[in-house]
Image (cartoon, rainbow, N blue to C red; front, side, top):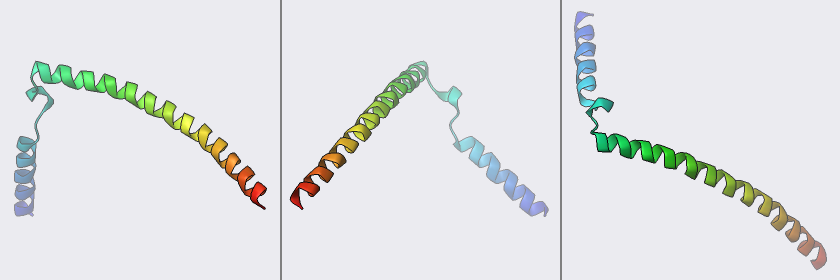
Length: 73
């Protein structure tokens, strides 16, 4: 049990040292992350608008396909 606990403690210590912390970022890197975060929200909104447009166009295309199939019969 003690060996297991010491192994777990050693493993956790190694993981903690290997994971970079946010404070290790330089000021330019922090500014770049902030800018990317802001642009991500704008891009997500744009993608949502495009998906909604695609859905409405899909309905129109399927309706036109149904008309085409009925005309062929």
